[in-house]
Image (cartoon, rainbow, N blue to C red):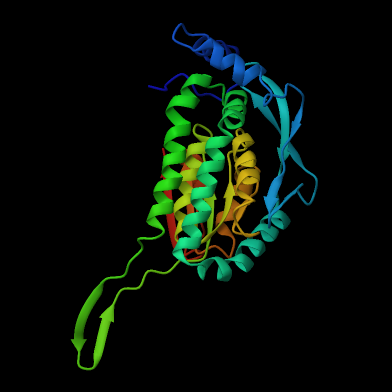
Length: 292
């Protein structure tokens, strides 16, 4: 259904294709106008930052990359090009926050996610405007096909946080009872793709946070906008260090998942991105990949 709507290429052919989709007859032009000309749309040059330990910060070395609007083909923002020092800082923050979040009750984690879902829903217009500008998607599709499922997914995992259970296996040895206890693994390193920046970020961080883990998430270097705003929304409801965002390229992603701290890594992207960003064997306990 979405083929042809998403592209980060700046070629003339793709710019024309995305522009054509945005101007298709079925488009709710009034909605597009609200997203692109409303109070949440800023036509000026933007500057995104990393989000580490509850604060927005630039990269340690000051490096940046350009973020391109695929409809115009022009750069409209900059984002940090994070290096080893930035990864170390984010991982240290997530590791320090883990004991407290691990020990938070299911009701506390659930309530935090419910409040995040409500806040995302309340600021949907801002997220839509950013996603349209960053991805070239038709605004009405982001509003109808992405925002409602995103909010629902956060609420789903908020409910799941209160239903984590162990299973009794009974007595298999005299004087001993065997059972399964589910525990959070620790810090999760996560790499999200460019085509569904908001939704894929939520698919990654919501279950991890619900289960009591802490997160260091890297959005695609081409589409960091909505993830940066997501961090701003979430900071009110989570302790510092539970959710961290580092921007950067594939080298940043590789450094993220190869770092010694994460207990689990999750990557979604291309086969090339997965093969370059995959962890060194035995460096992490768990590894999930959705590359194609």
